Image (cartoon, rainbow over all chains, first blue to last red; front, side, top):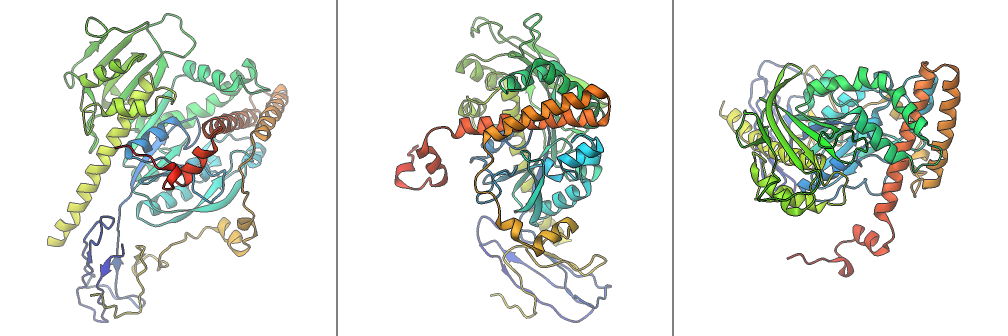
Length: 402
Length: 131
């Protein structure tokens, strides 16, 4: 696994050094060359050595719910293969998830104030004053360059900052949390960013389902909790929408009048146009407006059925394409039927989306647009990763010619 | 083959060593210089005293209940103050933690063989033959 390197160093001012590493296995990636600047003199070191066995791809995910354990993360890591698990032998309350190719970091770990600190100051976790963006930027930058970091752990149970854990740079780094796109420097480091936008009605319905089983909670307390957090959420978290390359918007269904259970959902996948290595999914004809109800003669669906919509649009002054699904999947053949009519899915074989959805049929959202679009975004990220890696492998070869 | 004529040691992990305007960095593995971190490095007691088992679920439920009561009290006085908002944020955080704990418990569940196989998939009992 170790790269074979030849290093020459001289004391001479004007000289050229070459550092080459021969790929000894599939893990080492690049051949790179180095030329020392001839005008520089330096007391300490005469050689500048740059080595990068891998360049990490960084994905940002903005979500309110929690960290790393969310369904989206599990679907994403599953697309790449392998199960994501907390680091073995470490703090059991760690928020980090590690699989073969991906590492998911929870941005809550960069809280500068722990729970008591926030209580004293009267700020929520949503407030940027409670987060250390400098540290976040430093560590994400380090991981992206292939340097391991000691990342703090925020223990959600005790509300304290625990001793840090060592994070090795992965092939794909996912930063998930409330503020991945808040700080401009961190935003620059992201290769792709996603925002999960849950509408207020759906959020309320989900929180009721989640918390009603918890003793101590009542409808009023759940409502009060949402209302209290709303101003900070709207001020700090919501504006990140405009920077995201893909937004998954979850709204109440339009197929059932006056539905407030939040079981049937209308999900919109808003994809920014013109993003490098990202080609939006489309239905039938790219850039046109289509409304499609697959249920009919060839496919029978049960109530309330499925309705698709595809159209170009503008979102915060950006050109976007919006793919929308309203309704639920009941059967396997509905899913495969829909998949066969969508284009630009970045699948490696026919039926891959269906296969991924079936693999995790027990995950929430597996029968509606949330699961479908999360899976599709996962495949898009895989496609982006492969393109990025292929591109980076060719760049040093070109630089050597120069 | 490789002839290392300098005193530089190249570890198996990559490193960035520069002599320019930036200060010289340490060789791999690099540790970032964080002030809050240095204290714990000196005394490693905390590191060795890591809990072996994660916090049990009943503890979290108690915390949720307590935090709701706290929040209601704090907000009874002044509904728009920072303290009130922070208190409800704490409720939300704890509820999320409680629900994660419940999901984890459900997922890990009941089968000791599953748990063993998660950590040791190559043993005879755990091998699966997919194709």
